[in-house]
Image (cartoon, one colour):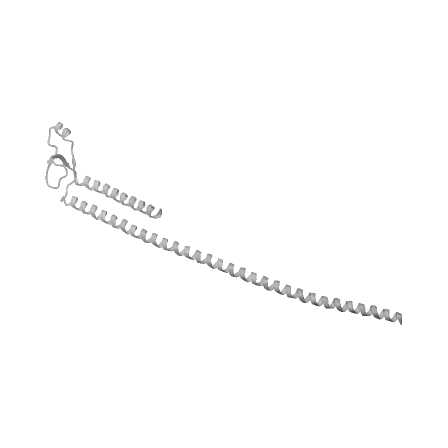
Length: 185
């Protein structure tokens, strides 16, 4: 019986170790499951917090981009408005200059107005002849007592045409300069 007791003791001891090992295994597995569940929950919370933060950053960036776009659109509308006003002013000046030139041409054609030039009095006196020159001191004259010569109406028309082109060129140049100033603001 002694051999049986010894076997029984070894079997009981082996069974105790097996049950203890199984119990330790289950306890440790339960503990690790809890730790892994906590880690997974923490990781999930970190990811959701990171996603929220990233979402906020994207929303803020999108809002900033929309604000900047709205600002640029407002600036563009303002510039377009100023350019439209400048364009209207330019065409108004061009129309006024054309009307003035047309009126002057009509007056020259009907002989209501005569175009004259100043003549050097010394050169005129040296010729000792009248030559169509006359002294004018009439009302509205800018130079009193100067010797003047009337121009042929055809030549006067050509001179008016040249000054008309010059006026239009100056008005166009002023419009271009105003445009560049508007763009550089």
